[in-house]
Image (cartoon, rainbow, N blue to C red; front, side, top):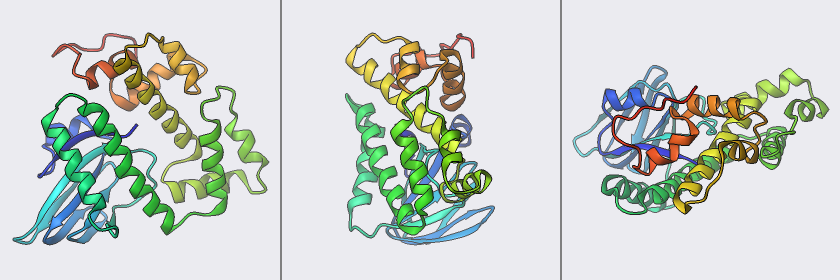
Length: 261
């Protein structure tokens, strides 16, 4: 699941940014032009441009007098952009409408907004992922990614065995995958499993289904529930048992997760 942790017409405050250190920043230029300046350099943007800044992403936006934007912060570890990148929205108003609709639901916080934001997050991230794939993807990296997606829910899946069975050097494959995807194969596997778990937890919370954390862990490919809980908390900042409640606004204000990390 692609968690939208902030949306607005201005960048998030330092406090909000500190709460989501692993978030990717997406800036959609709705009018005017300007530059997104970060440590790697400046991205030239205009109307219809989306600046993608991977974490950690210290940056500022300088625009002309007509500059307007929609700023989105999202937890998207599977996107493979290693450096800040500009994507041009070439399908008319499609991507802009997705940003505007997500902004509306983020600000309204109405009934069903959590599910709708998840859907818009998936839509936006999927569009950007397709744009990335169109730029550069080797056949072997596509094969590795597809194998991970097909087998990630299996706790007995041995990614190393698959990589070593390919007719390439293991270290070469690892570096090539990281170059094209921005993460190593094992990081991609863990990220995919954790996203599956977050989505399963949200679905269970919304439907009222009773399911144990051990069952969630196994369904998402984790052998050990304790390891799953630690990885999940490291990734999302909350234990699995509190995550969905917090997302749905059911966690009492000020209540802290007291479970073991």
